[in-house]
Amino acid sequence: MSTTEAQLQVCFVARQTKHVVPSTPIVVPAHLKRYGLSQIINHILSLEKPVPFDFLIDGVFLRGSLESQLREKNISMEDVVDIEYVESMLPPKPLATIAQDDWISSVLVIDNTKFLTGSYDGALRVWNSSKECEQTAKVHDGPVKCVSTVATSTSQDGSAVIYSGSQDQSAISWEFRDDKFVPVYKALGHTGSIDSISVNSQNTHFITASSDSTLKIWSSSVPSTSEVEVDSVPKSKKAKHASQVELITKAALSTCTGHVGGVTSTLFDRSDDKKAFSCGWDHSIRTWDMETCTNVSTKACDKVCLALDHSLHNGLLATGHADSVIRLWDSRDSGASMVKMSLTGHKGWVSSLQWSPSSKYILASASHDGTLNIWDIRSTSPVYSIKPEDSKDQSGETQRLLALTWAQNFIAIGGQSGKLGIYETNYS
Image (tube, rainbow, N blue to C red; front, side, top):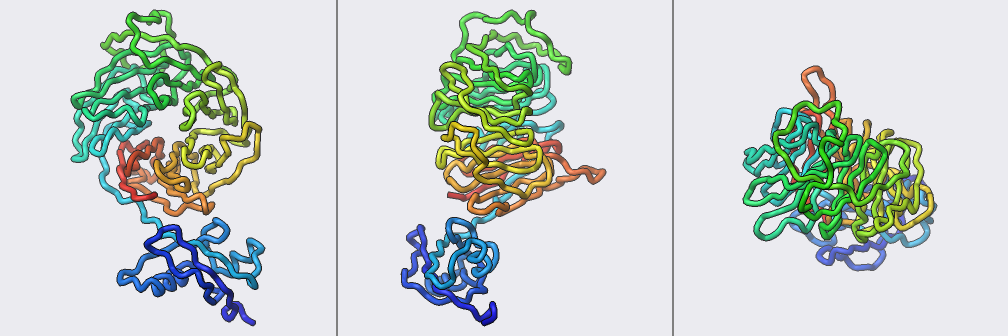
């Protein structure tokens, strides 16, 4: 019997109650792919407006014919095959592109109408949905490398607490109130660029990761007097200007050592403030006990790790690497376990990534190849790969993406082009 004549029995399964079909097995041609199966579901449901569906066999998306996937998974065509189907994911909808004068190293969504950028010119900027810059705050003496806030820090009156880290070796705590940034204090003690900041869920502590190979833990409370003499802190050789703002200074509670190269990213465990993660140039992904500043486990990798994020919904760590690969790890496994899954599709360093705020399957990543990729981890290839407007400069060189954030229904990206890209999503 030819491939096109082969048939098999399938049973369609849906988790979305509005699209449930009878569970009775039906016979379908084995050569069918996603589009053909989607036509069958639309016919059974008698949908007036066709709805595109994706299909999963053994938890993996169908990307070829039924027959080829069953053979790859060693599933007998003589058995009734359960096929789960879900509405196809729509691509992120571009909402705005906002240009500024220098590279964007970090981005935050403050609320549905305000977006924050940290830039290589040392400034933080607040943009509104009308593409207007509402404020430029410049206190750092070097490029801003990272910004962070806590999900619960934006209150009903619109106030928020923001933290920024800089190549000038300092971190600054800001209050965002009455639509204005106000610097509160400066955290001093690192001897290298601060490249990542994470705040715990209660906004009582934050962590900084530095090119000096250390992590530092800080209380977020405002000190009553300066705790560090400014003159005792080495100045960054790359500082481009001197800030005229004198801030009260704060010292770290403790320093975490263990990395043998610059630490590129750090993050509190989203389900446990007593635990945090970090990764860096030493090819390691480390788990830390925040109460003792102890490195409790280390996962080794072949390549430099540039970014990480932890999912509250599935417990997985996602890491972005210099070999263009995204790796998934079980954060609950304390051993140096093997990678659970590798996602390939980027063609440059994976500089930033973040899990969907609401889905255990969806992940977004930004890369030096200039693309924003959207992944569903039930497949090893990206669902969407998006090139922002003007992703190349006048010479034809790709403009690297350096920053990505995903909050509520918005993905914001920025990078070498100096353009803030804002996208709307509806993933669940």
